[in-house]
Length: 190
Image 1 (cartoon, helix red, strand yellow):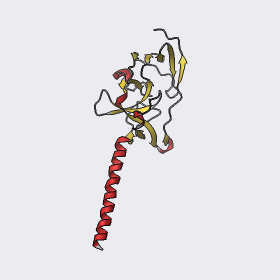
Image 2 (tube, helix red, strand yellow):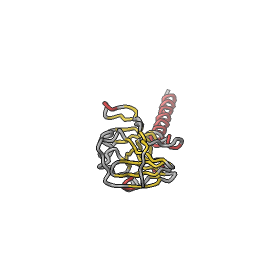
Image 3 (cartoon, one colour):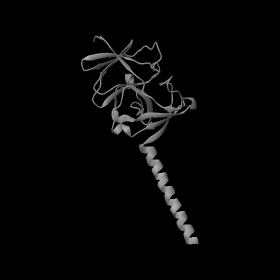
């Protein structure tokens, strides 16, 4: 009888260890919890929002303009930032006082961002052409966000993952959608 109990407990213990190892691997490589700190993504993400960051798809799918990502802070080692992707690899991004312009090959577009509060002006002007492994990120609260306007483009490999799901606050719980972003044709002159 004692031997049967011992084998049963050993079996349960082994199962528990496998479960813990699987849980740790899942947390490290698939989904990671993230708590928003600061006001750089307001009004869409606020201090204390609890998100799940998906970490796998970055290896087999391209990023999209408008996606919210968590990235290793290029100017603050060991920290992470949450930002929105504005410019994609190979594009020229021009930030002027009256808006953001995207130059793709020979076409120029003004970015129409419905998720940013109206009347936003940009004090810091920027003109950068992204390499094939770079993106340009900005916070939704442009007046307080420290982003690619300050630390420059970021390498795609610096992205920890995509913001996938908001768990808290409960009244905003759900999948995080990529907003429709309109690129209006522009006659921007350089």
